[in-house]
Amino acid sequence: MNYEQLYMNEKKQREQLMKDIDKKCKEIDKLKTLLRTKENELISAKKQILSHVNSNTAKDGYREEEDICNDLNKNTILRANFEPILGTDYDECYKMVGNHKCDIQSNNKNLKAQVKKYKIGQFQQLDRHWVDDLIKNIPGLESERTILKDLCEYPLLPNGTSIDKTKPIKKLCSTNYSQEQLDKFLLLLNENKRQILDYAFIGTNHEMQPDYLFGVEYLDNKRTKIVLCKITDIIEYLETLHFTITKGKTVVVLGDDNILSMQRKGGDGGKKSSNQLQFKLTISKLLDKVFHLQQML
Image (tube, rainbow, N blue to C red; front, side):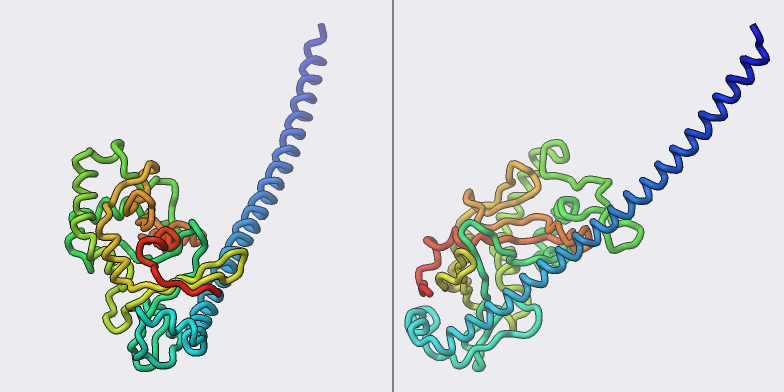
């Protein structure tokens, strides 16, 4: 056997193999670069879609508030139908400018109201704030600050504007808390129920607190009816219900029918604002409980 020839053959094979490996590595690097480019394009597209959806939602809400003002200013049948609640001592209504709990009010300020579009079974955002803001206004929840923040707030990435999901939030489950801790958490929520509801429905700006809630029902993208009630009636009804933790252990709901929920906001393209605490309200589940006046359109 010619060992020298065998060595040379194996050397050539190794050299060719290294060339093939190097070629494949370069191809893989190109594919990785292409993948990163496509991932960035996908992230950018998702952000654009989210921005478009949010923009359209805001525009739709803006138009709905204007439509309600027009209804109140020009529709004599609607005004007469809602007179048992609204009375007659309000003048021309207009849409409020800025981000307030009060969406519309009359010139003489005798009518201040919030407006919500809704579909049957669909929730609407009622409020979103930082946990620290909630507790600042409801000091009775101070002892549960950590639980609420751990439920809502992912740590931030070094850029300080985006969340880091490599560390999970702490669910309201027996893995993270004792039953005694969970019971105390729910007890404190229920003891401060009225303050929580006031915070979510009417806010803390006394000059901009709404007295009424208009719900505008949509079916197949068409306005079908307007319902109206006093916000105090909603709050007084919800006060009769109790806070509980859902099966998923990430949401706290008021009542068995999930009329009102408290949870991490989420979404927002992973921005810091997704760490806020959000209140959601399902208006259609209140129709036969507090909304007793309606106007078909």
